[in-house]
Length: 272
Image (cartoon, rainbow, N blue to C red; front, top):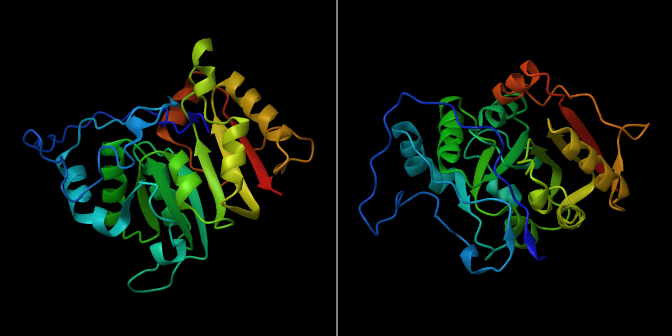
């Protein structure tokens, strides 16, 4: 593909009163045992990027979680290996997971942690490039005893293209991707025919692709390209938008949008 279409979530990180983690000295890794700044050396790839790696302000708790938990629950998207997903989610004790879903873009991870807590039989492989969010999700998983969350750092396109086995995912979730509202940036939007062809490969037949957005024109674009793609079929009989399913939490960001009269659209398409 000529474009990278991974996105950061459109939800802004909340303000934190917790002090930031200490900065590394020059030329030292910020988190020696944590996520790498550019695991696939993707700055060498000549392609349009729909995201920028966002290191951001990391709190002490987030930095501690990255240092302690990344070797166990984190992985860098380097494009150098194919993941063994059942082994990745194999617990040290207790039952394992029955299903594995990929979540692309998770912001600060609150909704991801809530979904993981409410459905411990589903493993969630959550990929993003936002370092504070990665640390926050790991911290939430640790505090709540969640063993069914794994955090991937890097470009979701490389993850999909090079690291996920065929027919290995029971679902893919894309909640509130960056809408790129300016006309000249529309080509950077995630949900495009090329992305759908790429994401279809690792999805099992019958797996669910679930998208949500509060941007009306992006919702219409999503519906158009998904309906036209030969690998997917709408779960809604009349071919329209779907009601928000119970398993997708109402996020703080979504609530603010609803307060401003934004209309949130869910799209639920099944892999043929």
